[in-house]
Image 1 (cartoon, rainbow, N blue to C red):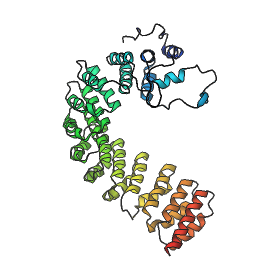
Image 2: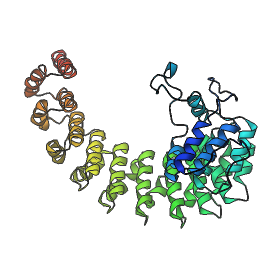
Image 3: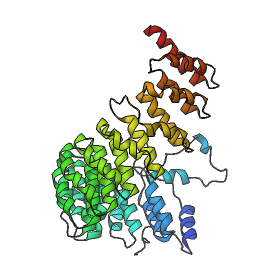
Length: 416
């Protein structure tokens, strides 16, 4: 990759990945660039050059990790640098914070644009992310989306998705037909970031693409947009040859929350892929269609623990359920605390009188959340045994459980 050397002579002297990154840290510069409306400084060309140069020289894993976190970290910290070591270098925090600010320095913008064509894919991605968080004009970004270089088009599409600019929607939709599948995939991802319902039709057209990543991106984007007009087009993707596409389709249908998808999602609860079964269970929990109860009850006995947890939570989320399946009660005896807790909460929401004894039995559980869920469930059941159970809960060691029991008993007296 062509290194970024022209900006600073004092850039990184590379003797290995650790040396490269440490060298950049030693050359940290306090930024005097433009500020965001809240007073935070955006990086100038010096900081941009040092950052991209260091990332291009370090271990690819470190580069990818930093690229993922860029812009996601908390600003600054405690006053007086509390929580940092006493020998920390001055200015490091301000320089780090500047990378998450809105970059407006013209020289920095030019450097980021030039880096969209870098050999190193991580450097291109970081440059795209920083450009997406910059003050670049939309017409200039649109020009980059139409570049003759596939690398630049892909990186520009990433930047547009980071910034979520609706005015770039039309240019991104045109990019779905790009000859380079990687570019088209990033265009689809960016449209998903923007979440404009106007993109539903162009995205559904590429669901039939031969390229797996493009199908995956289009399905994901439709799930982000959450428009029920796409339900009929997404349902067939549950039968895609690729398990990741099938799982993404289930996720998307869960986001769309259209009950017309219930039967199709129930069917893929038997899919060979655990990823697909898990996504289907979670989607049915989001759609909350009681017609899925029996299928989800069977999924509580799935071979995979994650699927069992999702199925239990989904059953608890279903609308107008008054009958608790036997598999949900059996889940209370699981050795997995998370599964047992989810089952207790689900039983509490369903409040089936037939599970009164099971809920009372939970009052002796070691887990506070489970005991609290049991009290909440019992408070919804009108049965003589409930009073005895709630009186027992008044002696619980946890004050919140005791408070919930007292509130429930008070409600019973008011109802009388």
